[in-house]
Image (cartoon, rainbow, N blue to C red; front, side):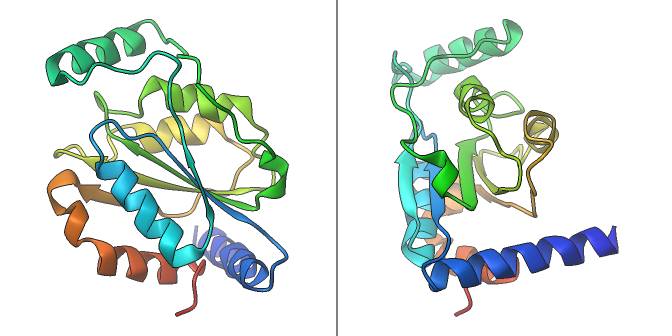
Length: 183
């Protein structure tokens, strides 16, 4: 385990150095329903200089919380793969991909499954970040590992939705810890 953590740190340090030298690219991909995950994504993008990509569905979720939760539960029960409204133009160009989502019903929204199954993650570093009410990661990290077994998945960042607007320093510390930024 310790050797794996050292390997991950080395890979991330190289990716961060490559980005700074213009030899690699960072993508910050996220799905946000209420705006909290979008705010974290923007903070990551500002601090890393990566490209920003919002994962959206063809049919938007209801703005009504109860209706949205009911549909999210139904999608999980049906193992649905909601279609995305857009795709990343050149995923092969990115070495490091931050992937963000709210914790919905104990995991990721099902459109994240659609997104993750769409691309080849072999040799990429996939860094999760999650906003939540109180469930932190739920089982999303296990789901992420199953969907992307060939990706390097280092420690992610989880933050309560209530704390998002005050999380800039915490995000910076986490990014430094991952080696993606060296400030």
